[in-house]
Each structure stands twice: as structure tokens, then as C-alpha cells.
Image (cartoon, rainbow, N blue to C red; front, top):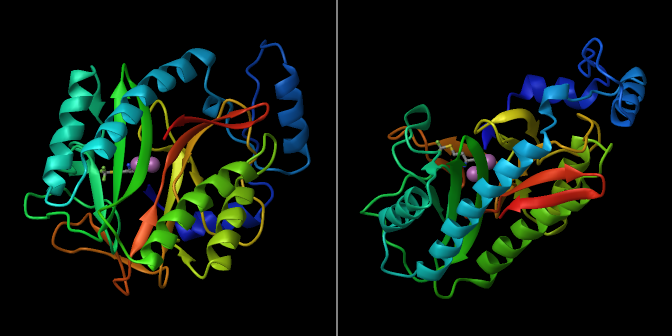
Length: 298
Ligand code: MF3
Ligand code: CO
Ligand code: CO
């Protein structure tokens, strides 16, 4: 997930119009989709740029990449257990990915040292696998896999409960998944990104949990992190209009305590809750269709 710049968040959520972004190239026939997009743009809505809409061929590539991501997470789901180190998870994901002709996107991304993120208990995201970190009964952990196959990116993460955990942790993990699904259900073609954030925030708060504000979902497919930023936190609607063919993640981080987080100074990556209470996250890659979101990677 990527860092939210609050200035951009604020202006994008509030301003109905920044500039004209949906531009039909000269001499290009205007499709019915173009007409609908131009109409909304004329009304002052923020549209994606036209190149944020993936071609059927690109969606096919992201779909094939997603098979690797799903397979790697399925493997982790079968193997994960108490006594295993997070480095063992890294090895599983790395080898699975390579043996399926793909590249683990995290490895060397901005200097990130491993092939997967493993975020344990109070770690919100971007936890770095380590030999020293051994899973124990009662732990909750997020495993976040991103694969590149033939240049196409897919990004997904799941929570795992090691053995038996507290009822509170169980509820946190379950509600975080429900928040992702509620956000996805709220995303409608020609609706707005803010619909996702408000659905997630409402459900999380209803359950007495908080939503991390500093990291968000993102466009994905041709690169790891593309436009748009997909916010999880917000009370009102607004934001960019959702057009069929957009591919993006939703990946809410839900905290048991307060939403505030900090980055571990020692490694520069690990994001931890300020109050050191647990956090849970699930992530899917979706494509917007005429009928709502379709899950590509989970
Ligand atoms: N997979 C994360 C996301 O959902 C990003 C991880 S970046 C890394 O966007 F460098 F930490 F791997
Ligand atoms: Co992501
Ligand atoms: Co991810």
C-alpha cells in the first residue's frame, strides 16, 4: 500500500474538478463509454485519465499473474503453523513464484530486502521476514504477495491465525475481511472512490475499530503502484469516478486501538501501531466491470 499525502487526499475528496483528464485522442471514434465519461467530467467530476483503463489484453495478463499470487498464498495457507519463521514464509513464496515463471515484486523494490511482506500482530504492514521471528500460538499475521508475470502485476494479502487466538483478535481479523468486502461492494461503475472509503470506515467504526489513514490501496497492473490512490478512510463520498477497465487494490488496515502508526527506525519499513495493539489487513486486486468489481487476486 502506498503512503497517502493528505494534501492530495483532501483536495481530491473535496474538489469536484481539478482538470480535464478524460481526453479522447484526435481522430479517435467516441465510444459510448467516452460519452458517459465526458458527460460526468462536464458536470465537474474527477475522471481517471484514459490510460488508467486497461485493455482486455492487459486484464488477461493481470489475470494470469493473479493465478501465481493466489497459488503462492494458497501454499502459505497450507503450510503456515506455529514454530515456522517468517523467513520460512519468504522462502515458500519466493520459490513458488520463481518456479511459476514470475518475479516477486517486493524483492529490491525501493530497496526492500525480501520477496514478501509478513506483518505480525501490532505490525500494520511492510513487515520484513526474518529467521528470528518465529510464529507462536495465538499470533495473527498478514502475508502480502505481489507477483510480476510477463510484466503484469497482481497484489493480494490474507490474514492467518496461528493456532488459537483471543476472541478479540478473531473478531478483528474477521471484521477486516468484511471491511474489504464492504468497500468492494460499494464500488460501482460510474460511482466514486470515496464510496469505498466511507463503506469501510462506517463498518470498522461500527465494530469499535479504527482505520489506518496513512496507507491506501492503489491502481496496479502495469506497475506495482499506479494511480489512483484508493482511500480506506473517509466519511463522505467524492473522489475519482470509477470507470470499467480500471484495475486497483482495496487493502484496508483495521486497528484494534487507535489508527495512528509509526515506521520502525531500525529498518525503515516496518509499520507498527502507535499503541502497539494488533492490526489486521486483507487485500484483493480487482477489475471494475459494467456490473461492479470482479476479484482478480485474493
Ligand atoms: N504489497 C504492498 C501493497 O499492498 C506493498 C509492499 S511494498 C514492499 O501495496 F516493498 F514492502 F514490498
Ligand atoms: Co497493494
Ligand atoms: Co500488497
